Image 1 (tube, rainbow, N blue to C red):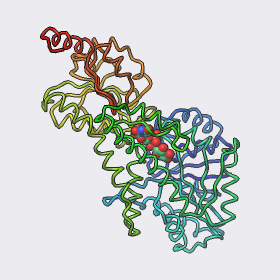
Image 2 (cartoon, rainbow, N blue to C red):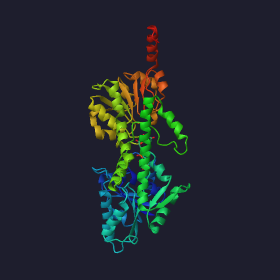
Image 3 (cartoon, helix red, strand yellow):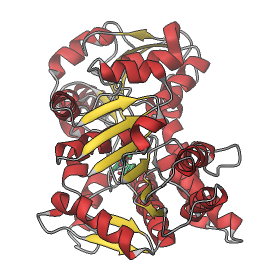
Image 4 (cartoon, rainbow, N blue to C red):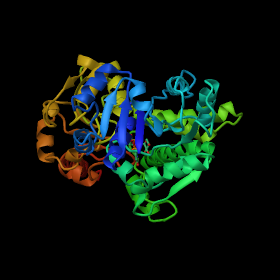
Length: 462
Ligand code: UDX
């Protein structure tokens, strides 16, 4: 099939490359000339596992090309995907101007043709309920007829950063939102090779498809905030949230995913989508109360480590040297949008601390926000030199099994604030660390505990 992708952001690039990989002819459009030059010269602007390999192969085999000119992409395309940004406006609702502008440009091009033909316009971006109708109106306003010249389909993506290629190639389900049988059949044919293992292609109406995307992300975000609140309570009652998680996840109605307590969710989707769904509720006269709490719990959780550090240093973080492991909002990405690490850095800098950070991929992206107001290290042990504490913000694999004896000996003070529950608290105590994690008991070095016990027994108080 001949496909155009408008927008070469994260979703556009992954979708375009994966459609090309299945043998389709794909042309991607972007208004950013530098980006298109970069892509044409074979370089990717994002890091995503497996993408580079497919990207190189499909460029070489001439199934994947890039242009700044809509005409090059749109006129031959049977299916046109809109993969454009929908940033939150000031009031939290998604800003549709990029999507509607692109639809207008496509329609202008088509009406100029002697025979505009028939094309499917697909909303791939996460867009509020009712957007398919608005795109359709934009096309109709330019003189095109729905059903004859075009149909608009809502086809949300469920790609996780760091696993996006895999998610695209083997989706749990494909959602196609359209009331047109013609469009549904064509879209089904396009996606059939991706669901050969038997996962479903669900054809629903446009509005339900739009709701599916927001509901999926909001329920996942709700699980995280819920578990973060459970963690906060576990700390107060002396329970361990990881044990609680294991206990509940054996119930098949609950399952085991997205129940990890931590320092809150980040990324380009969850915070934005929860906010946008809340806003949709308001616009339709419904106060979606849970979503409000999901967001406020998340804000609180992203601040938690700053308060904990502040308390630990008796309210005086001025001049304290803080080592940080992990900047990306999650592992396997260089993305730092809404990253908890950035909220923590801001809090630490406000209080006069000095931060030195290491991340395997996200140093350059962090420099955009913080420049040289923090220091960056080239390996994970370097920031520990004489540091007053280590804070862990992202669960990269290499942080899971570090040389803890070396960590202990390199840190100025062996205290670790672990926002991702990577280590066993009792083992940390045995190794001589003071160790704070999320929703689990705070432990002090075992030798301290023994020394205190010995002192107490000498005084006859034990
Ligand atoms: C998400 C959705 O998973 C994807 O389907 C959608 O299309 C886009 O948004 P992504 O933003 O890449 O994908 O990240 P995801 O892996 O879902 O994680 C989101 C955030 O939740 C991360 O900050 C992560 O650290 C946090 N998280 C996740 C937790 O704190 N606990 C968990 O148990 C799971």
